[in-house]
Image (cartoon, rainbow, N blue to C red; front, side, top):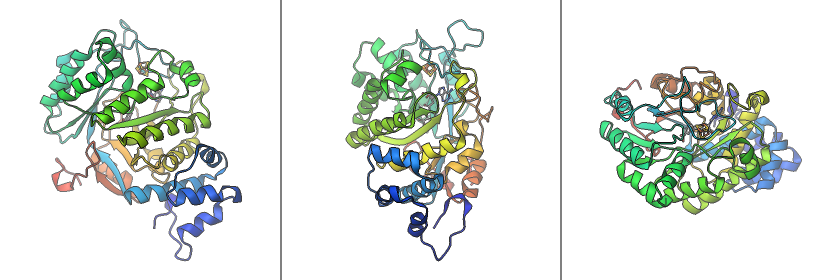
Length: 390
Ligand code: V47
Ligand code: SF4
């Protein structure tokens, strides 16, 4: 049996007895429910978030995580392509976007993007994650061609492309329905969607931090439509800015309800707001304790999500390791210094790179079993992974 925080198991105390001893009386019915694998309600989640000791949240989340994925913690071999940081929107939390014409704006040509993919041929990468700003000029057909050429350059890798916000903009501009737009991109090689653009679903908070872009309803409609077309997706939540814990739980509830309908989400990724170089900088950042409480509550509340991802370029390596004792069963991938979103917002790792040996060591030293996966959580046996340090 695994106990969080590196504690050795006491043979005389079972996990249930350990839980019992640290559960405040008022929380017992909720804790028993969650520990038994039953769904907890919004009000119960609020009580847990407000009143449960951190250690209890960790134990409960670990129990649920281990019921779903045992001792396994997943990672993959991926890299990002960020075609442009020019964006028509001005989200207040964003440190990445630039207006067209700015000195540090970029807009890679199609050939440059394709060369980035070609440079990875033979490297063993299994996923290309493509996301960027919402460019005013590039349209759906341009991005469809981009996906087609990337997939041709890297036929073994899965193309995980475009946040719902980028998709909403390019599909609406082409005058197509969401279903038609997604089907077109799928036919060119888009196989899964990343979870970006969800931010926080509460309409009032969303209006204040990113009121110009797609609404919560549009984000949920795009993901629901993708699921119905057989395209699995991820979901994110940007927390630690002006929202309250109740807004976070409302966000989780909307995701849980969509997942009940479609079953198309693979992973949930809580994204910690990083405060450098953006219009919300003065509010600072959530503490590590808040990060761990939010992560654990996500694992406990999202009973129908198979995976919870602790995205290491955003947390940094130390908190990522700690996150494995709070319900996360995935740490994302090798990245190879190909994303600027977090380094521009002040994340610890200015150059996010981990090779597979480092990822495996990080997972192993937290007491878990490193497990390489593809974009659909199919395990990749060590013998198939190339070039293989495992
Ligand atoms: O939607 C922007 C976030 C997201 C900041 O699906 C910020 O596997 C923190 O979606 N501080 C894009 N976050 C990234 C994304 C993602 C990342 C990792 C894995 C997956 C996946 C998806 O980045 C945006 C926004 O929520 N973001 N600015 C900031 N200052
Ligand atoms: Fe644009 Fe995305 Fe930044 Fe918002 S978060 S300004 S949509 S790049």
